[in-house]
Length: 319
Ligand SMILES: Cc1cc2nc3c(=O)[nH]c(=O)nc-3n(C[C@H](O)[C@H](O)[C@H](O)COP(=O)(O)OP(=O)(O)OC[C@H]3O[C@@H](n4cnc5c(N)ncnc54)[C@H](O)[C@@H]3O)c2cc1C
Image (cartoon, rainbow, N blue to C red; front, top):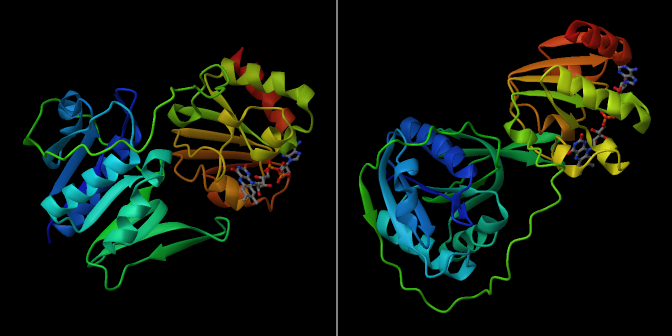
């Protein structure tokens, strides 16, 4: 047993949130396997992240200095291959992100590693077991990797509990990697339309509405209700498809994975593709007129009720 290697991710000079989720997931696997956790960061100024990434349970932090401040898949691949050669890890964890998708599969294919993308849960059973959706998330597939002494897994952002950032740098060393020729030219960053900066993945309390609200004209009422009860508004996909809400607010397989403390679902049936994005919620409260609605299978509190009547009551209570 050699260890678990987490490859943290940075963008535009900042650590991405998924880095801490990778450290959290890596720490749990390392503890279960009884091996050390090593964390690597590839960046033009990697030392800037040494403190934050030295989270509890991190045995060693490796800094790889990139030749440019922007992601370059060729350099990233060279760096990760150098890290693997240096550390000989059993498991390599990266984010299921647009950057890591440009490098992880290539590292796995060329190196003959076991590989899984979009992983939503991990276990250790004498080897890594990775869980991911199958058949449009109708099933959860559990993958093991017979005959593969080393596995690379890309973890879905938002699906794993993040580690707390470290407070002081532990064992840190720099690994020199030859720069080589750049493979991309960075044209600049453009922020996506973000619905006023809303980030439903960070919300503590989500008021989530579905097709049960019937009409776009009812939307302002739920926006106002969310604000009054201290929740962030999120939606199921049909509301996005209909143009009633922005993609930034969609929960689910093709939307965001959320993990609020409270998820209040009004008029959402609970299709597997929706549940895929909210099964990490703490307490789920579901309101639906249909007693057979599948959302009730994942609800902690279920109300077979008209969502408009529930909204009336919440408005009354909110004063
Ligand atoms: C590849 C793929 C990816 C997808 N990705 C996503 C995704 O990311 N997110 C997502 O949400 N969906 C996704 N979907 C769509 C998903 O399959 C469902 O169609 C969708 O989640 C249904 O949304 P809904 O529950 O709001 O609507 P419906 O299924 O139409 O449910 C509406 C619910 O409201 C209830 N209702 C009606 N009136 C009232 C009332 N007055 N009071 C209380 N309850 C009421 C009904 O009983 C019903 O259960 C995806 C589908 C595919 C194929």
